[in-house]
Length: 165
Length: 422
Image 1: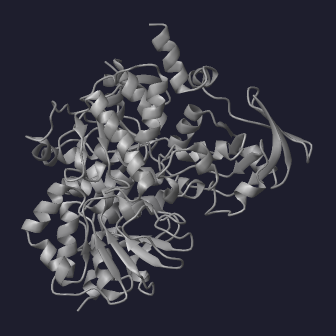
Image 2: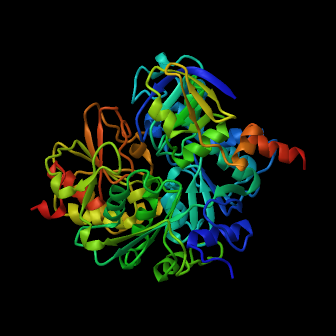
Image 3: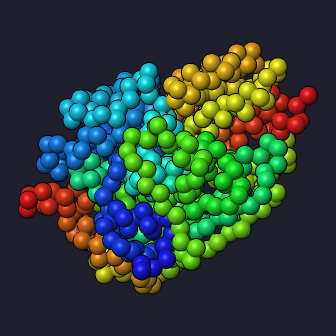
């Protein structure tokens, strides 16, 4: 998977309550959730995201609630990949399971400034900062996790298992 | 001989069918219970349907609890709850709790004996880690993991490294389980236990009743933890006996088990603690927060809505009234707790104090309903999160505290300790 877009950079401990406030959890429709993505942290987030843009954050991205509405809203808002120094564990699993691309790369987060043009090769784990002419590397996924991603997510993996009997 | 293991490693090894496991190892575990609620179940059900299976793995091992936006807050949430209810009827799921039998899931499932010692439990709710108080491995997951669990009865895990928090000594008056866990989160931060299991040991933990132990394990996720756990002892056995519907299996950490870190904590250093906005780790002694005036106090939730919490609340409120500028909302976590509190006369004390008492619901804790904050308003809550906008408007503020501090605050109108009251 390859992505190309403008980076939007935020701080550490971005919690799932600001990613998608609970007052919108009375629905699970992705397009509805996307309208309110990150609004309590940055009310302009949704309007400034162009399809394919890249979300960059410091440590512990996605901490808090287990709501899968968080990765769903980020993906539906048009974000192609989230690059963070670290992810909270439930968010990490949810992103893999729902097909939101994520990458752990402290050096990329330190190197990227808000508004930089960034290219990502997720399979190779390479992040290129086009604006600054820098290249960063991401932690590779464990093979077990990579297998789930390659099968198209956890449910697709189970589906294949069910079909195979 | 297998390698020395922690309690968490032993439970995971047993459920993976392996003689031993070690941190970092990826394993597939058999599940004892899969949980979801009215917010997370609709997505889990949608994902379950995509597997192509027509029946869940075991209708007796799935628990579905309508507790977040119930009694239904609006039409949309009524539709969400109905998706879950229809699925329960279609699949013949036995552990479903309708309004009138319902409670806040993490108070309800232990009380009803659905979860117990030695279990591996996943729940599509981050505070599923609460059940570690029973000597179980329990962790929060998203809806898709819950769907996979409902379909297959299995989940994959990376075996977590364990952190040991050994708390020794006697707690000072009015210092509670909530203060222990806020103290720990303040010490290690909101990602201090990221991907790790938090094991709580020591004489202070052993002296806690089950309600207190559940408060401690409930907030493991607030330090980023994968799970919290307390080994089974006589207190656990007394609670579980005659209640747990399956056979309890006890595991204990080996004396030479390996920990990523061991924290020695003196109970005497733990004081009534308040977590300031907007992180649970932003802790300060309550005694240094008396200048914080509040508009609302909420006592309840999966963290502090149990009987002991309600008793402490009544002890502070007895013969007193809530400050005229404050709204006090008390939410017993289950119907059984509600009934017992009523029998003990606690409701008379609350009503005499001008507090509102609600039917069980998660409601205000996540800014759902039943006590939403207006712009700029402040609340003290016995809940678990104080993120931006958690209880209402993004400019509102939540301060996390114990039931004793919350009740004293409701009377004083500003953050206060019980001993501050006349």
